[in-house]
Image (cartoon, rainbow, N blue to C red; front, side):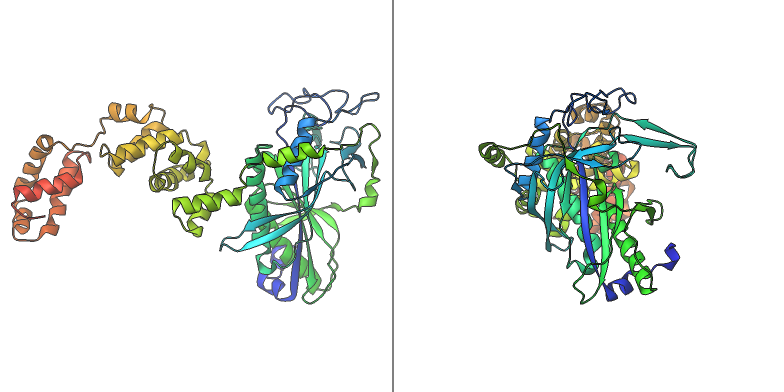
Length: 502
């Protein structure tokens, strides 16, 4: 099925109702792996962070990482889940080269958290509730690198390299119940859910959840059923989608692909699929196994996990303010619209603006600089706002210099340029570049006199009552002072010298 054979999105939604299921894997930020003491630090030499346990060597025995269990409970509580009083691990058996044990230690019918929900806010402010089936603990696999092919996948590669440093890193898999009723907004709901979940995970401090680094990835399950039907269709599972935009695109593509197959009389194959960033398409991976094909059975080498109720309640009381609640509070405090708050969220600027306000700036100035000048520079450099080499405290200081009349906006932008270039703190950049605003009357007087003398005709118009013409003289003074004159004071001096009431 090629892109040109797809049914249009509108035609697909006119006939079918999409049903989604989203499975999100989150790598926890623990110092050691889920069942052994190997480091989880990034960047180590391949296969240097392994041991007999995470390699599955005979005679090795796993031990559960307590920090991983605590993180799992925090995530479950934040998702309004019930926390199991007793649960255990299982072996999920299947052969894959990056599974050194030939089974994955996971949870099957007894997850640590279950039956929850997450409310997500769509672009227009509508709240859509996504119900959570389960959140369970498991371990990550190793990493395969396929060499010699054109696509980076195993097909066409000459050989593959295996790095087991990642094998055994703690994962939480969060699985939704079937998501129905989203209709044409299904792709938007999918993206909003993953975005909200990412913010929640980060707020808990259990993972950085950086999708571009694989710390959080989403499997998009999608099926279609004819409108008015009550039985779900056959689903496909697009694996390891690693950006918010891609989650939305993969969902949209699969809706159109499914519709094309069904309307042409074909049958959907239950399979995994790969998403392609370049054109937003998906291609077939492998036939998808049913749960029984994995031959789950209880892990005999691990004791059950039975979190004490007092501990669970202690963790519940320690939860931070949830992201959507926090955003609504900040939106009211900052006096911005829902649309503007969404733009701030999309730009990744919520924390930066809040920190800038805490450093002394007013909310309007903090928003202005982060969403204006700094967002522009981040976009030009192709980096996130948070990656710019400027701190909220520095932004607050520049805003203060503007507020007290030491700088105007033009000069402030030059100060930002210097700070970003590593020239020092804002005050140092002002001093080194000689950027301080000139507002002293004696210093401005000469420049004003010269501008009047050089533009006699304009001066006569002003004397004749055309006060608006003063702008031309102000511009001349600003040019002469390299933009460092206080424009408001320059205008006042011009009118004074020409004997005109302001």
